[in-house]
Length: 162
Ligand code: SF4
Ligand code: SF4
Image (cartoon, rainbow, N blue to C red; front, side, top):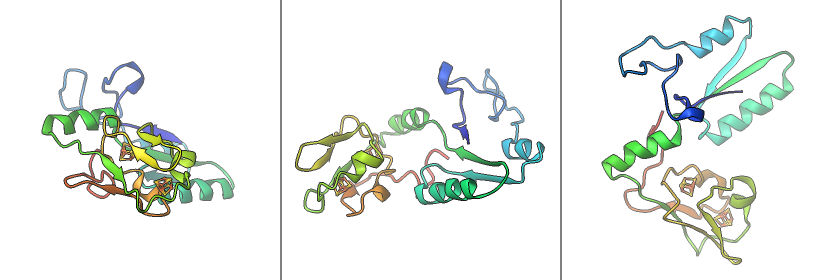
């Protein structure tokens, strides 16, 4: 698995040869990771948006069931960068849990565990001070209890941060 978050996250958001600009912000030719991997003789290469949970799960299962080397390139811009851009546009609107639909099954906490989730002991809530409104948790809830508020974005469906 190659985690391609379009930035050098570990040292503070500098560009690297896998992105299309230099440290001074000038345009640069970006290294094509997919071609690079294929050039090593690896045939099974998939580029997947990690917010697409179903596709990612299938790709991992397929890779495990296949002989030989497979590579999954998980490509999505670092959420911190996306959030910074959205804040500048005033577009951070948190998601909420509909208490009527929440069965307190805790699937969201046990399998996804976004830090914005709050376990009240009877329901799950979303802390609006922590949620940055990505919508990635929506497909995790089996009861469709995680819903947008008016104006919320869904990063996967609306192509935000890709
Ligand atoms: S997965 Fe959905 S129904 Fe289950 S606890 Fe979380 S929000 Fe509630
Ligand atoms: S919308 Fe995104 S940030 Fe908010 S609770 Fe869901 S996964 Fe976490």
